[in-house]
Image 1: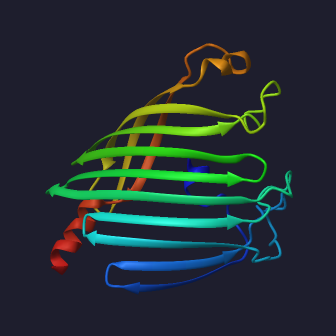
Image 2: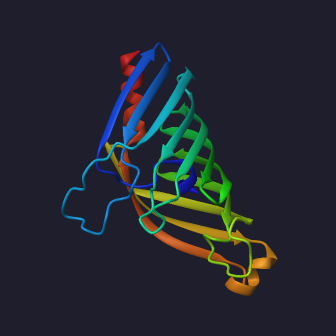
Length: 230
């Protein structure tokens, strides 16, 4: 669902300004709406034809909220006349529960309003619990995809279909607590879609499993630095 919830792509040409008062921050940007071309080793000409704004608030050290809206002019080269309005909101709760133990939960909502396709939405709820070298997490997602995006020739292009996904995962760090954590993880995901899509995507239950390597800054070290600062 990140195509509903964050920046669509890397872009050449971004200018941002912001104001912060205590725990409230307001930001505004102008940027190039069109995605980069296929020439990956050169720079595209900045156009500064799109804009976005965001307000964020951290009422407590453990809670972060934000609301944003952006206008993207002609983001897709294959559909140059299609523009996009994107609106997002999120709530993040992160709590240190003791020595080297952390619980984090995130809720994200995003909406795209595209020319000729109308509005589609996405929702994400994710939570993970980390204790020592072990991390357990779960993720629930719901996105709305148009018949145009799903390439359905027998439906109206602006018809919307909800797609669901649920994931469970686990990571075990083999290098932990020295500024950088590195671990091996596995994730299982199962999807659900309307029966009307069976004609094009089959009737089998959609599921997947992946194994991955995770490298990140140590949460334990970060919390220790915060405690020392206090």
